[in-house]
Length: 114
Length: 112
Image (tube, rainbow over all chains, first blue to last red; front, side, top):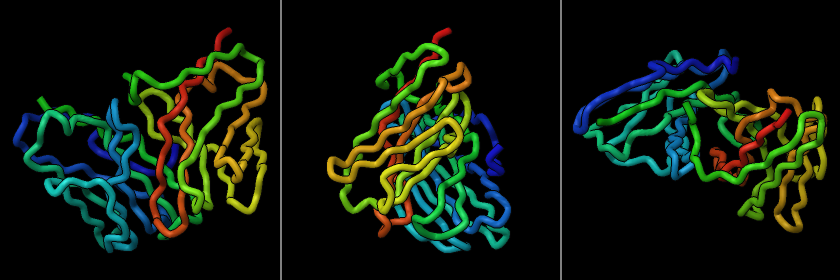
């Protein structure tokens, strides 16, 4: 068990809808990362937050947004959903803001857009 | 269900043999590397890491080798067990960015 908790585990929704994915990092970790894993793209970095502030941005669509709250949990909001957004969404956390420690991943949220 | 792509390179080894999984990384400025294991239906699990000032690091049954000259990373698993069956990813960090960039993954199948 990595200590990173993601909810829900599964989400099925229709095109055009909006969903929110939730992540609780490991105790003591200040950085939260979001990754998308689809069959043809592998693990793609979306965005990172450190202690409540956006730290780095990757290939995140404008329809997607995230935030990290004072208690350090994070939410990823996906709106105007398209079929191609179906994927596994992983949250990871680490102690520091940079590259000096491994990321620890949750077990993901499987999003299916129909 | 499966959580990764179906067209991954696959390495099949017999139980008890040693496994070697290879990874070519892209950025010569990368200074930190990690190997992850991903089992079906789970998130990537940290196995071992190595910094660019080292060329070898050992853990329990695993060894990571780093060859910066050819930008190559390998993971060696000793006495491979059925529980080692999974997809293995290497990841690199350039040090100037706070994100990890993942390779495409290798599926390890352990046969009895």
